[in-house]
Length: 94
Length: 359
Image 1 (cartoon, chains in turn orange, cyan):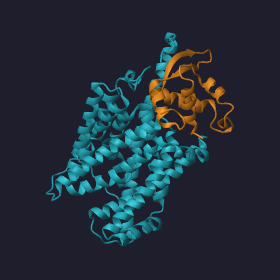
Image 2 (tube, one colour):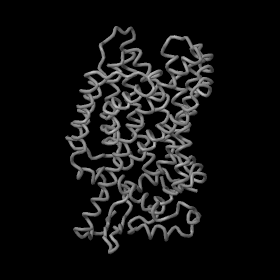
Image 3 (cartoon, one colour):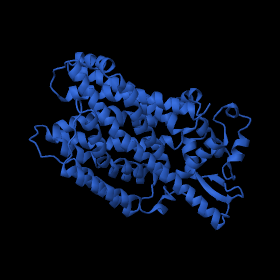
Image 4 (tube, rainbow over the protein chains, first blue to last red):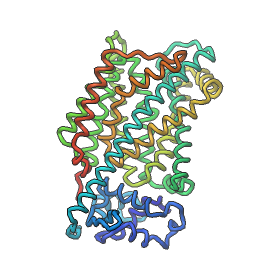
């Protein structure tokens, strides 16, 4: 099994070109073994998505400020991240 | 790959920008915490080394192998303590270290962090210590002060980190501050040029540490990776290197006496030193990801400022085992370092796009 952060990157790489949100990532991974782990929560996934945005792995597609004051982000994985994922995530094309 | 057209209202864009800047500023604050904590760690290690020498009655010259052996033991033990703190932190912050550590260890990219450990722990540290003996403190420290400059060049090449000419200027001012702070009268050194080579290698290895660990931390959780590779890995490597140096130079008896002495006379080294190391290393790894390696290293090199306050405090509290005197140069160096850090950080909007990749 991959570390959780890498599993999120792998999930995003498998959905190349698609719009992703923290909720959609969590929803897409809800049937995996990670879902039963204590680290599988909104804040952690948000933290990893923020980190991926900072390092250029995710690009912002949309940022929507909701009524509750929270910023709802929509991301897409970048080619830069796909290259790194293909190189280092086992089972992906080299 | 063509992304969808962006559809962002001005308010949302502002909030988004604010969030990105906030993360980068938080990264630089973490680097600042690390820089200060490292000074406390240095005082603590100096006190421990002095106490072990006095209490165990070791009468030996401070030759290069002896300095390397006790430095490796000290670095190794504080890194062991720090790795324990890191894993406790990972447990408390629900990072699931029991499952994540083996998963991370199996991934090839994680081993870049192991490479970072090898470069920064045993190699760069011991080269730096040896260079101080061979080419003098001023030349050694001045060359080592070039580390943030090396990092910024490497980071530009590897990560396409966005650095404006002003940031480069700020880094150069910081480098000058460190050189001024570490200035001491030149001495006649027989192995001067060999010392210069070791100091250059040391600065390059410290710079490569930042690059290799950021490369890994882009993908893996930086806290798990740092605790496993940078800290626990460093403990193993330092002990091996220290012992090899001991055996190779006929000082294995000193290795044993000093190693036993740590647990006998200064058992707080692992507890307190480990805590300072935990606060001095883990935030750096978190900061590499949040604000980029160049800015992180630049903030780290504000150490001339903090060393004065921590040094004076340490000397006032534990005068038996620690002494500190500041000079006009150290004050001047600290002031120059403040100017450098202001030049680097004065334009927060630059923190929006840390890397020159598609946005």
